[in-house]
Length: 444
Image 1 (tube, rainbow, N blue to C red):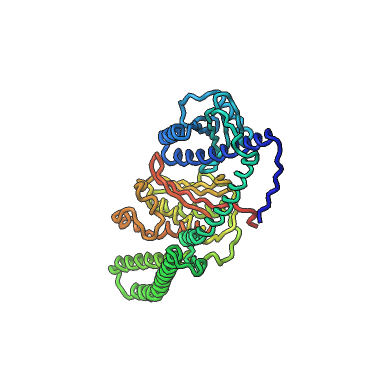
Image 2: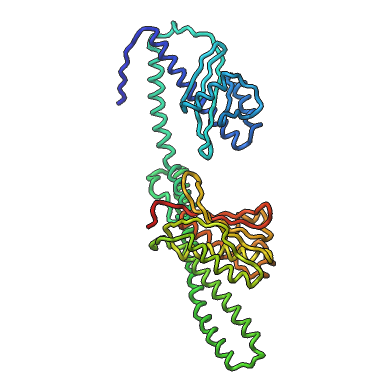
C-alpha cells in the first residue's frame, strides 16, 4: 500500500514545489544527455560529440557543454564565462549547481565516465514565458507527481519481472566466458514457455556440451601425456645400453636420439602442466613467495645458459616484494617468458628483466617486465601469443625449436594468481612482456 500525506498550502508554496520538480526533471534530462554525450565522445571522438550537441540544441532547444578537468570538449568552442564559472563550481562541490539568468537557466552536474574519469556536463535552457496555472487545480502538481511515482513503480516492477530471465542468462554467459564451465541458467525460467525461456534451455544444453568436450579434451591430453612417459623411460634405458655396445661412430646418431627424447620429454611435461592449470590447481595451498629472490634465481640460471649462445640476461631493477601464491608455477611462468626472450633476442645482446610496484585500477600490483632485442612480433599476432601451440611463423619455430606451450602456461599460471600478462613491441625494437600480479594484504 502506498500512503501519501500532503498538506495543501498557499499558491506560492505550490509554485516553489513546481519549481523544485522542474529543476529535478531538468537534472535528470541533463544527466541522460550527459551520459549519451560521453558514450558518443569515447566511441567516435570530438566531431561526433559536436554533431550530437547540435542535434540536441536543434531538437530540444538545450545547449550542452562537456568539460573534463576544466578543459572543454570539443576544444576551441567559444563558451560564455558564466558557463565556465558554473563548471568550475560543480568541479569543486561535486554536486548539482544551477544559475538562473535572464537569457535562460544554466544547470551543471558531475559525471563519471569510462576508467572512472570525472566529467562535468553543463546545460543551457532557453527562457520561456511563464505559464498560467490558474486553469488547473491548486493540487494539480501534487497529483501529477503522485501519478508519475505510482506509474513509475508499477512499470519498474513489470520491467524487472520481464527481464529477470535475461539477467540470469547474461550472468551465466559471463560465468561461462570466464572459464566456469558449470555455469547454467537452471530452472529460473520455471514454467515459462516463451522464446526467452527456450533460449535459456538452449544455453544450458550448449554449456553442457562445451563442458563435456573440454573435459574430454583435457582427459585425452593428460592420459596421452602419462602414457608417453613409460615408452620414453624405456627408450632412455635402451639408449644407454646401445651406447655401451656400439662403436664411437654411432655416437652422433645416439646423441641426436637423446636430444630428441629430451625435447619430447619436456613437451610432455609442459602438456601435463597445462592440463593441471586448467583442471583445478586452485585447490592447492598457497605459500609465501619472495618475488625479488625468485626473479634473481631465474635470471641467474637463464644467464648461465644464454652465455653459451652469445647472449646474456641482466636484472635492471628489483624491489623487495612478497606475495601469496604457488612458487613453482610462478617460477615456470617467469622462466618460460625469459627463455623465450633469450631464444629470439639478437646475438651479443642482453635480455632485461625488472621487478617493481605499480598502481593500477585502485590496486597495487607487482610488475615483472622482460624485454628482448629481437625482431618483435606482428601486431596481428600479439593477441594470440598466449594460446597453446600458437606460432608466429612456422619456419622460425622450426629453427628455434619452440613448441608454443610455454607462454600458454605463463598466461594460465598468472591468471590463477589473479594477474594479467601482456606483450607489445618496443618502439626501439624487441618485444616486452609484462606480468602483473596483485599484492593483497599480508602474505605471511
